[in-house]
Image (cartoon, rainbow, N blue to C red):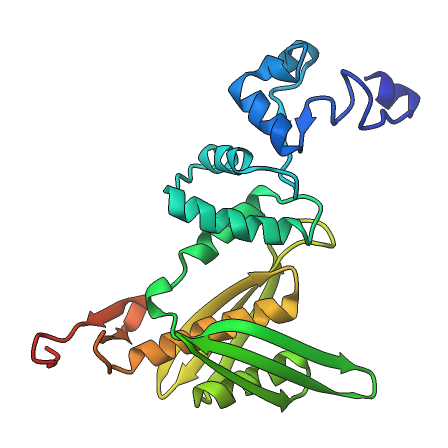
Length: 260
């Protein structure tokens, strides 16, 4: 109240009443506070009007801090899943100052997105673009133990990346829709791209997220391409056929290799 009346802003690191007085970003501090609040807090935050201590997820945060935030958001992961997600969290945290709840949920969604139909995985991508420069993209995709690499030009870095992936996969679907929006706030926020592509009458959607919107665009398009590949039945693992309304029909071969 005094700050509002006087117009003097309270600095974040001000003791007791500063915004960061009960905020913890260090993994050691977060772990200590989770085990016992009094480890690093000599007073109850509620006594000065703060609802609860804040655990800020940064590059210095540990597994316990991430796991606690996930539980707060209603997400419980098994140990192997948590380890994989924590690895992705560290990669993201190195790119931006704070990882917000929406960022964390986006990582969870990405981790569980279409694992069964991932034929190709984005291994490497480099793009060049600018005024007076022909947009070019070099893309490397992995399929099991095989590595494929192609380069292509386009109207922009995204178009060039899509053309390169078309060369690798042998597909040339029609891009029906492309949408980009921010997952969280700030100039370092993750961008989420959703695309819709059509291939021989089938319309599938793909989604990708990254702090780099070109990379997010590539992930989204590759996600859609993987769905198209899976819709073409073949191989010992069967296939997936897209149905109306967003559903998928999973086909599995019998012992003789025949599909029913």
